[in-house]
Length: 281
Image (cartoon, rainbow, N blue to C red):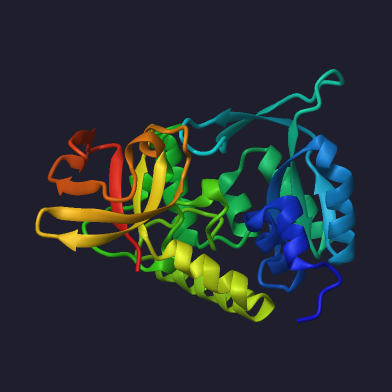
């Protein structure tokens, strides 16, 4: 694929996840994507979208983001607010090839119809229904913890734990780690990325094929480890927010032991209901 926009340049400007989504829409793998951006970033984003022949629609509302501790400043939950002339906050931007599709997406998103929004973004129906169910039961709780168990290895294509570090193929949380529709989508995205930028694709696969200690409030860490009789011995910590609890706790040589009701890291017990120890392979 020959593109008028450099993938590496767009990654440097927008981050890996947003760059991937924009290129996928431009190539027809997705009908649309929704990005959260600061309003000051709209002019350069509009220029990049134009060079990719994408239509860009800007949401009318401001988006107030709740920063989540231990996730590198990532804003995982946002709420809409009326846009004020005295406040230049974040907003949602909708990128698509079909302007009418983008208009529908913006209208349904601002009306709060998550089911139609998910459909217009190309998410599997099973995952849309699961998200609606989770939203009704546990507002503000980490959807990965609610949807993913850690009792057995999970295909690396389904690793959505590292979104806060810009490392993922999927932009939605699958209904289960075995969701065949989500896995098929992730596989197509990876094949596209491999053709577009082989080195970036190989690096992403390496980063997603890791152990991940995923917690609600103490941070998220991806690492490689040796299996010992007593548990895991950390070889290398690949990504973690250094200011999180896990960033302070986990290091090369750390002992990680799974218990029936939690995970022990170097003698520190992490409570079970809000902790997962994933093996992505």
